[in-house]
Image (cartoon, rainbow, N blue to C red; front, side, top):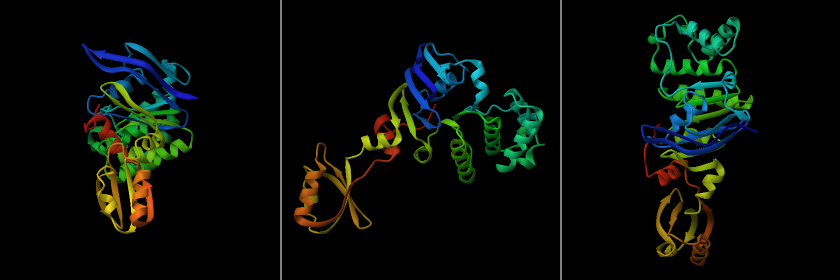
Length: 302
């Protein structure tokens, strides 16, 4: 079953189309990455998912039904902009947010303490939010999003402001939550995080889906343009411009970028004809390389 679906949703502001006919589906128990350059429409799409704004057209479905307020009790959400009340003590704030999500006072206090201990905020529970660093505030928002054990987590740039140690800690928690049955959607500009965590992705640009699907399938689809070859003998086969656009030697092998339309099997035949080949394999591109190829090198954004 799909936990969350967007069906041709559209949203425009003062004549500017932020999201234009976007469709995606997130399966139960998956970790899904929403990617795109500056101005792509990621945050607008996420705000429609959680009912902050309504689409001008199209449908948002959650847990198999049209989105309704009652569904949001089963959702944990981190907005891109920090949404904490600065003058309230952290423990009181977490209790308040837990109560909003249907927890009893005792359950909210226990969850706040447990998560704060795990993420190193327990010594700050009696301090006002404004006294916390940006990274601490981001961890506090994460605690608020997960303390009521939501079925679905929607996280807009959840690692923003975190150092590598705390980023790794949150990644471990996300993997743990997925093993416990949660479904997770997050946006990020860190392709390494996406490659580690995500089962599926949707890359959007100018409000439209550029590519979507399983991460492995997408990488395989963009493979075949480069090969790694290890060999002993004559390297003259690398001089054939019909087959080889360029090549770089790395750690005992050569990485070859094929010429447009070149058949890697023909290159293999040429290599075998002049050398003893001990390795010949296609190199799958990184997600970052795919991202740059599809959106022209634009940077991370909304």
